[in-house]
Length: 300
Image (cartoon, rainbow, N blue to C red; front, top):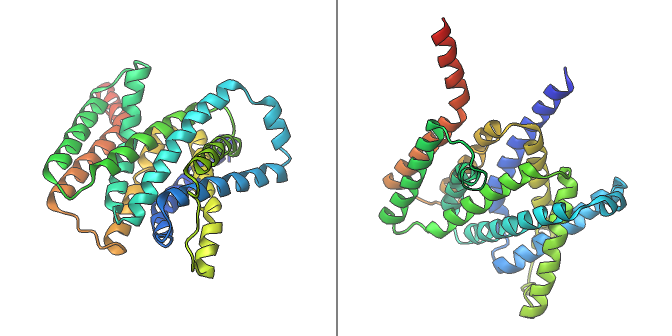
């Protein structure tokens, strides 16, 4: 087996596991709903920093990273850190307030938002397939906002925009997955400490937490770090088309969680909009195989 093929297979497995863990993690945050979303986000950031720092120390890579890091790396991962913090905050809020369907819809919109970023900032050529997909996604989002009053559009738009932009930035990163997560976590920790000092008590823990609650809280660093590390590894080893296809795993996991565990009811309008966005993603992913098939057919 070649090195490239082994890396692709490992990336494929990492992407699937990452998306399943991210989809199921809403149940984890729901179990800690006695705490405020800001407090949970703060602990998530701090414990993620501790976890990734220990990993780098164990691998004896921290000193080398600090000596070789460039301002370009700091600015890129700083932007990624802000995006992922916003994404985490909205996701935790949605998990606590039983808005899991909306968060799943946001993660379905995210890959197509990445296409839009490439079009706007890099003037990338947009094919008919991608143009049609983007058109129907925008149409579906507007349809949801106007026709489903009980659906919180702020959740799926925020998650879609932040996660789509985060994925786009991670593809451009020079640092390896763990080093990149260290920079992002460290920058976020500085911001969290500043906010906590300013807000006076933003990380207070409610009285009466059980041993299980404390165990869950202390584990939030690993709950955050493992899926993101797997995701970053997959992004480095897989093409964007495959990453886009595998991102279906996350929203599908979220929709299952929303229906089975949260009892959210999916209306006909929501099902129609989801189906249109789903077909749009399929159209983007299958663009290359369809074009290749048509070229072969013309030659024959």
